[in-house]
Image (cartoon, rainbow, N blue to C red; front, side, top):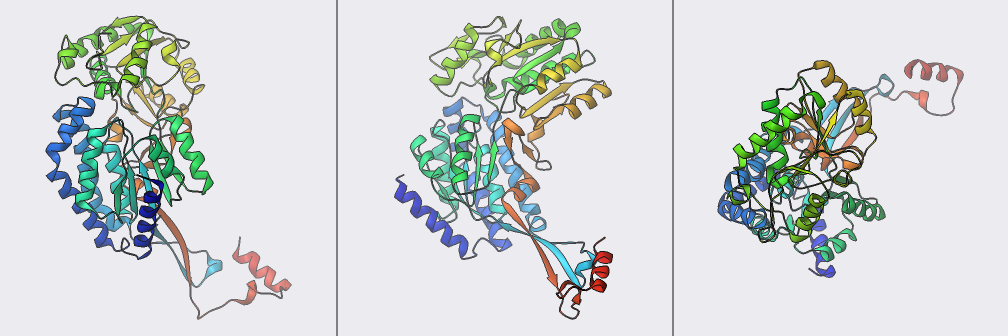
Length: 459
């Protein structure tokens, strides 16, 4: 799409938003219902597209993509009326007689830029929140998932007029052109490198931004953990979507006394969940493209492979792989892995481990497997991270009842459920002052008597 066409589309959405068409509650709910119907109509195409882009099975596609989108939709259909209400708050005595209240209002024309790894869910979840809050949306999915990108465009075109929601396809040229335009809000999910560029461009127009990024998310297993359960859940969380998950456990820190037992259990679980030859498993997916496949293979060539390591350049597949021994200076510990490779680092002192983790950029997620309440309290209090789980992985983002987002290098802002509604809203603070009483003490000329009254009211 040419720059002139983008500008025309944005003008069209600005006019539509300024008309007030998105403000009524019923129009917002009707938009969500139309999206729900369109998803149902195009469900078979969704599964085919996710299989084509990432090799996802129908079960995984529903579990981690379509099912989560429907959960967010149902939640917003039930709760948007409550979220959109104005709320009365307390009023200071000095402002008597008056009523104070907060009133959520939509931000306006918003830009949502979504990534390739969960191309349906990470595009539509923020779209749902934005529509519930009363915004218009320009949705820019990743060109790295072309089949899903086309299905997204079909879903949106069937459900909405472009003045409310429009999908812009294309690659870097379209991304750069969009970021040069003026929006009322930008919501970006992707890499830290691109996130910095989004923030830089947004600053030119003082546009507020949410950045959902990533980072090296640690998974800690201490000697009190249930090792069988830990191994099963770590394998699930790490190798889901072939490790191409922003909240996947990036590396495993295991207490030395249980390291061998845990790694044995992990190998058992890999075989139970993916088979003895995962590359022949029809439900084992693929790396998104040759660029990322080559990057991951290069990491494998530099490390000690304990288990797995098989690759297939023709299908862009890498088997679930465990790397050990490993240390903090290993090449694989430099950047987020974003693939099915799990490095293992032993530890003997939890406090020392916490210091090491805290010396690195704040992760998007942190996972701790432990039955020690003191250790759980210490880690969750001392370590900065976006969100996480105790004795599980991944599942903290699969709920509309809590916000999901990063901190520091792993992002800013959050969404899902009420938090997502608030992200795409501006909460106005309003005082409605009555006229039947007007205390004179705030007006000049100021007198000693007036100052005494002011001090009494403003204590």
